[in-house]
Length: 330
Image (cartoon, rainbow, N blue to C red; front, side):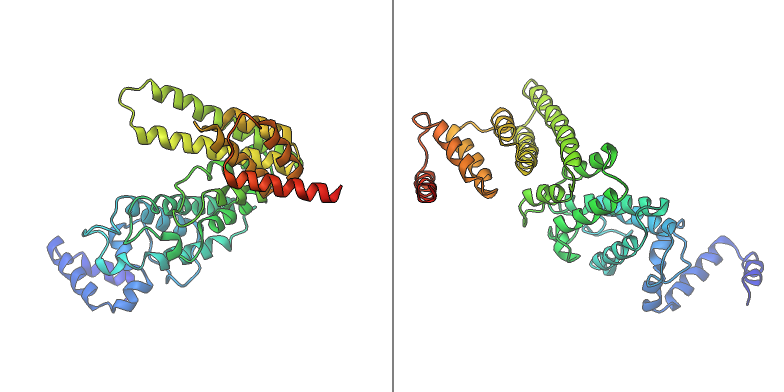
């Protein structure tokens, strides 16, 4: 029977009779075919046109429709709590869909209009997966492990696609805003910062990034001031705001160190990093200098506070070691 013939025939039936036909036909479709053509998603959202197998290449419009529907369902916890929208058998298979979408999106040239849309869809997935590492949307919190792509690698994927279109302010802001996501507890948050810094291949892009990041820190500090005057504010909000300020401050400091602008790095850190204990604050700064193998600068910074800070034993030992090395070199 042709589709035109089918349309004529079903007009003969009432609404209830057509419902019976649909249910009976659904029962007769093999499970494998339902999965191949994602029949359930089509029924749940008729705008998702089922015209290709999931294994086939989908158009950017089809990918966008499917991904938007998936992300919306995920945020509504429909892949975690029992519901009639997402069948139980489908809730555990989400990672296979996501892995396929990521693969398909990455095939699209990022310099084209479709490629820019693909990059935005990758960003949408990245933000949702980052959120779900701290707020349960699936069966567990390890969503990046489920798709076998670490959070920082996923971030790098998006950054590389975005910056291929130029290291201008708009594109750098796009990437910097991706640092402001929930961090995967199984990874160090600074790995996201290092990933971004590693993508900056010119002095100009580093300087422009510092300006954008400084504006972000300033806004966060203003938010913190307002929060302290808010009687309804919780301790956790203040804590996380301070964490964000310190994270972006360290990112700026690391870019300064990368530029070999040590004085600017130290000055910005001392002015903006939030830590009540002067000794702990200095310990963190000295650690950043040591990580960059800036031993001379480490010694200068340490000696600057001698007699003012009671350094911990590990720092005293490092100081003696570094001084001995410098004396041997002399």
